[in-house]
Length: 434
Length: 113
Image 1 (cartoon, helix red, strand yellow):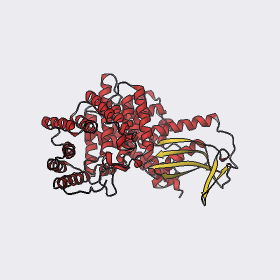
Image 2 (tube, rainbow over the protein chains, first blue to last red):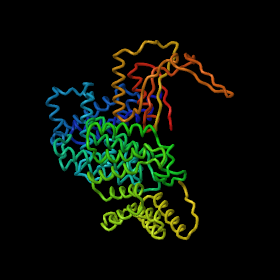
Image 3 (tube, rainbow over the protein chains, first blue to last red):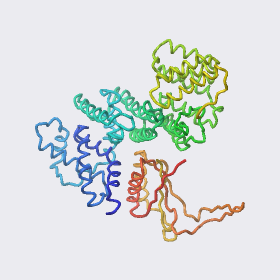
Image 4 (cartoon, rainbow over the protein chains, first blue to last red):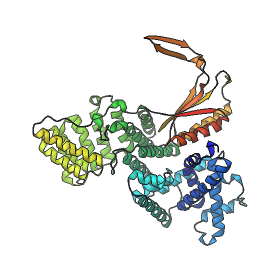
């Protein structure tokens, strides 16, 4: 049998087409759950037929045709649920008569496909869904990841992800979420929800919240892909480019972030020769595009600009901390949050010294919003170490270790606590890893 | 994962004429589609060896020879740097590219760095 017909090749072709096929079928039926089922049914047919006849020239059109035929057959059989298939009913009225043998049934213009893809992204990220549901649904239907892949990436049982997706589809159907791209006032909030989902996926790969691995580059890759697809579909949205820029620039540091034993390597300790210049180049290009499209910068573009400051410095000593402080100050203005303030404090410590930064952190501690956030304590610990207050620093790092949910992070915090205690005792201390 | 895909042909046999405007347009659309899918990172053509040079260092001495260089099969036509989940996906996209060309050979290899 020719290699072209093997299961692996068929599955690869299906994988490439799945997001587009699901989008078109979702538009056709108005039901994302049904669209997914139809796409999966089409795969079953494809595995059977393509092994026999070879992969067709246009696999996407083939799969879409089969999916639409199944939808039409189901509609004709099942007239009672006319609501569910109302879109098909409308389409069938305009397609006169529907020749399910017409091969053009599955041929959809690329503009229409792009419109459908964008609609699907907005539906999958709808605010009616809880955030974890949006993430799972987006990864499944827009990213085309399988349930086992998503479960592995998030280190949760497959059943959890499967249920999350089932419930999400039900919620979308019950809420009557229309299959369309939001316009008007709603658009900005809805776009924000989409960007949030993509960035959450990226962050889970960049700085994992669970499990024993510090980074999961495949998740960063998926998020980057989603971001790039979105920028292709919405080429005039500054913050989409801002997000892509941020992700590219952060992704450039992935290999340098992990030491040989899997331990995290903090930014200022990283071997910058390992920073990926291709990602940096694309990040800078995306940031430039964002700046062309909008001024002043939105939150993602600002965060990207901060990442760019680091990317442009070949050595930590070259970092323009004053510029970074200015960018954080601007970010705090457009997106005020205790976490932004914490990051601003770190930048201030580099630009102006630890005492000023510690004062800022103590304000955050008093406010209480971050009291379960492990990084609050590790930042405070680091500042105290810099001020020679090693006993207090050790306590902070121990608190951070107790709150960290990722195994590598926990180990790092525990190691910092030990180092601080060693300094307190006046012993010379060798740092592990780095 | 990153892959480098490149087209191969026997340079001596390959006609020197550039692709037809129609082919250029089809290729352009393919590149746009693959870029929008987040797959193509960078892509371009590559000039014939006659426009290039061959540099070697041996025993502490450099030798530079202007092209053409004759080899059994040359990197002719173009290259693309792709970001794909795995080799089967890179193969799938390479097949689509060949579909645009009509015929030819593409080799695809993981690259790092």
